[in-house]
Every structure is written in structure tokens, then in C-alpha cells.
Image (tube, rainbow, N blue to C red; front, side, top):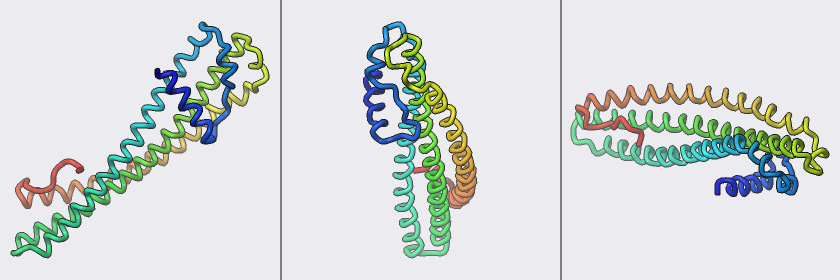
Length: 210
């Protein structure tokens, strides 16, 4: 079942024109003997892991997008509380709530930038896994002396995963930089959240990002 899913995704990826898109023709793979296909299991498993990781990165972007929407609503409600406060104490608490909600929103926006950088890295890492898988298929075909395999340029297939991994490192550097900004924004939010919590004896400012 998983193998069928990988084949289907491979066809889709080829149609989208990935940067590292050299593929071994399906007709060559179909001619591989059973013992040669065993050599593909490791790269198939690595490909499955890369797919799962990319999917989780995409899910995290969606989760944070929803959190940002809720944080905006929270900020609007806090701003409304300032105008509706009946006394100075309530007004002070409402202003602290506005500051906390603004810091929360800034953190979530920074976190989303980090998430997007991670997703872009994982998208590229998936391409790397595909290129490694294609190299494994070509090596298996050449080892089994499948007719037509000798016409494919081995050096080009070998270059794909190497060049792709170099690009992944560059994407990781960007993700790391955005993670630092996210961590700084989170620290600032936590400071304001603690101030609001202390002012309300723990009744406000949940420790969880909603």
C-alpha cells in the first residue's frame, strides 16, 4: 500500500517539475528482478520518512494559522475590555491583557515564519529523498543489467542528491535564524503573560498558546 502511495506521489512530483527531477523510466524499474528490488527498500523507507516529515511541517503551518486567528480575536476582546472597564484596577488589567495579546500575536507570527522556513526545508528534503531513490533504482537496474539502464547518465543521477543536500543546508540556516527570532518573541510574550497572571492571581493568561 505504501509503495503504491510512493509511486503515485512520484508521478505527481514529476508533473510539478521539481528541481531535482531526473527519473528512471518506469519501464526499466518494471524489469527489475525481485532480488534487485530488495536493494530499494532502504531508500523507499527514507522516502516515506521524508513524506511524513513534510506533511507534519505542513500541518504545523495550518495549526499556527488557526492560532493566529484566535490570537487576533483575543486581542480584539482585550481592547474592548479597556473601554468597558468600570474602575482603574479593571482598566489596568485590561491594558495588561492587551499587551499580552499583542505579544502573543507577535510570537505566533514569528513562529509561523519559522514554520514556513521549516516547511520549505522539508519540501526540498523530500526532493532529496526522491533523487536518492532514483539513484538507487538506476544502480539496481545497472547491476541487474536491465536493457536501457546503460543509456542513463549515472553522474547526473549521482549529482542530484549531493546538490540537493547542499541546498537543504542553506534552507536549514534560514530556518535556524527564524527559530531564534521566534524564541525571542516567545520570551517577550511569556514575560507579559506572567505579569498579567500575577496581576490576576493566575486567573488570566493561559500558559498554552491557543
